[in-house]
Length: 228
Ligand SMILES: C[S@@+](CC[C@H](N)C(=O)[O-])C[C@H]1O[C@@H](n2cnc3c(N)ncnc32)[C@H](O)[C@@H]1O
Image 1 (cartoon, protein in one colour):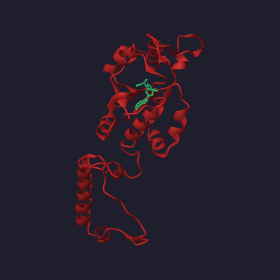
Image 2 (spheres, helix red, strand yellow):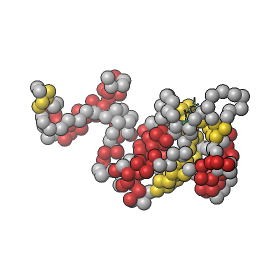
Image 3 (tube, helix red, strand yellow):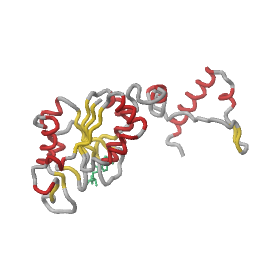
Image 4 (cartoon, protein in one colour):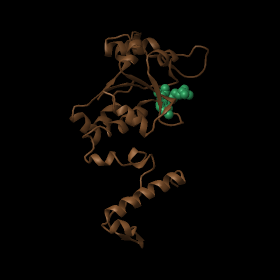
């Protein structure tokens, strides 16, 4: 996968790229580029935003600035991009990210993520340059960078070879393997601590019973709603 993140804070992604599974993904040939729209802005003094028409607080990311950044990166009119690749704007009101959506994105060869700042994007960016908007939750962050990292974190760990143990990403909370349920509980040594014991079935060495117990635990967690 080749992922481009358009951000006014490209240095944030240096830390992100060093994290184990992201570094694994990059070492195995996947790419992550942080693209700074300030570098290609047609405006003076690195300007990228402006005051909102109609008044109100904050600054809005300009459509001409985003167009220049996308043109420079892809050598194409950005209105043509959505037909060629997924161009995703991070917005609080977008489609909520979940495991199925992350799996869908993990099948893409190319991803473009646009991070907003301040009041957000000029609406024409969202109307003409992007395929969709993603939200990581119904709350407001100061910028799209952390949201982009959340998207990339969950997408990259789904790519083959990125996690040390392939099975880790197959059977976990909300996966198809668990029919969308939260994952079952895990325990490790010691088998007893302060009188708190481990369910006997997990110590039995009986794989079929362990499997049934785990699936039942996941099912009941799905049935009972969010964990306390
Ligand atoms: C301060 S927010 C803008 C909020 C916007 N004025 C509103 O009320 O919806 C700045 C940027 O952070 C990003 N952002 C904030 N919350 C987000 C969320 N929950 N999911 C995805 N992106 C988010 C978006 O890129 C947004 O343009």
